[in-house]
Image 1 (tube, protein in one colour):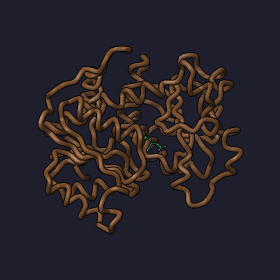
Image 2 (cartoon, helix red, strand yellow):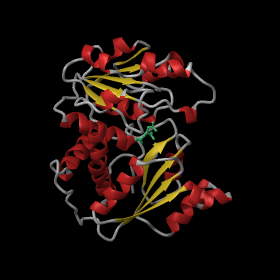
Image 3 (tube, protein in one colour):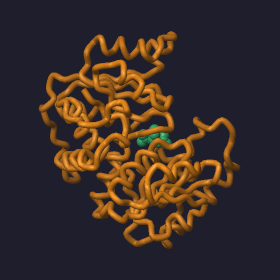
Length: 310
Ligand code: NCD
């Protein structure tokens, strides 16, 4: 059975089907989210080896809103802290036969490796600096909801590109639909290999160049936890790569500002921008639930055609 390991192995048709299904789950503003029962009796396990607020909560709520039950385990509270290996932890959980395991791990490729050993489908909730497929899916849903078309859209992704699984999954997804991506950040955080991820990806260290003509500005957190030595003088980061109102005045009037969270106000984004009408940050959070419902429904119904270990 296939889980969801990354965007790289999903076809355009499959992505479109997930985005369309997520729209069916959306509730108009101010209304309670409807609940469904199609996955009643199913159980999913959330296994998180890294910190998370929105991803873990929204996977859990998504499962519940489909009628499935969800339990969450964090590394600190698991036997990993007693020295158990990752494979043993996964085999132990698999012996209890949940219907899917959702996992986040600091090692790139961890879920791909484990999927080769397990029958139970794995959903990747972020692996190291590699992929975060449901984040890219919820970002695409959010862009479409704001009325933009992906074909020909210029998307500026700004910040710590080197350590960002969000950037990689978004590059893969958006370029499958004809978006043109410009990656921007301080040179040490801007690896040139990323231009090979997809056609039409360009790099710049100039924030002004990145946001010129951008339909979407996607800001990223500086992932200090993944940096072994400082890549730039920290005090200067906001001055060069922090998104402020003055940038938005020079951007397209319909520009959409996004951020996967957690946001660091005053470091990569100003409060005025984060809280402005152009910010879709909370829409992204909300769409996280609908997209994860669509993904879980497909995986639990055995319908994910791609996503198996390459
Ligand atoms: C991101 C992650 O963990 O990859 N957050 C998220 O899932 N919404 C980005 C980050 O930690 O900066």
